[in-house]
Length: 125
Image (cartoon, rainbow, N blue to C red; front, side, top):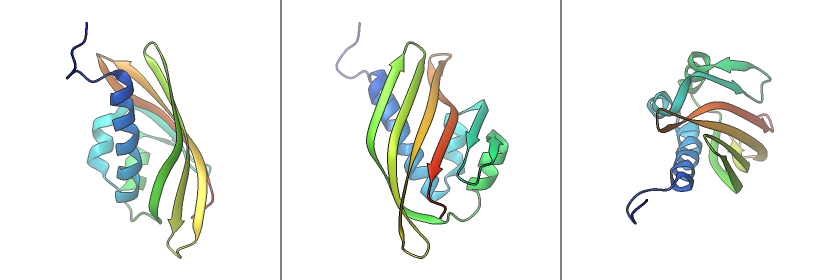
């Protein structure tokens, strides 16, 4: 039974997705330390597969993009698994408009949603 102040899984996953996008542009490593699972893996546009430590190292460097926004966000919840699909737009450091798509996978572990995998297909910034 839920009350009106309790967040739904959809609310939580929407907040996590919005935070993920914002933190990526800002290089907010602390945000990712909180939401990424220890066994997180990421496939990035440079075709590298990174584990959590490698992903955090990547984010600690200056970000080559600005104005990143998610569009057409679809969140699918299947018991303790959630998949987030979205289109993204951003500008590279030369101000050129770019776009791509991403898919992030979340799993509920110990009653908390954590990101276990991320895949980004995008114009190279």
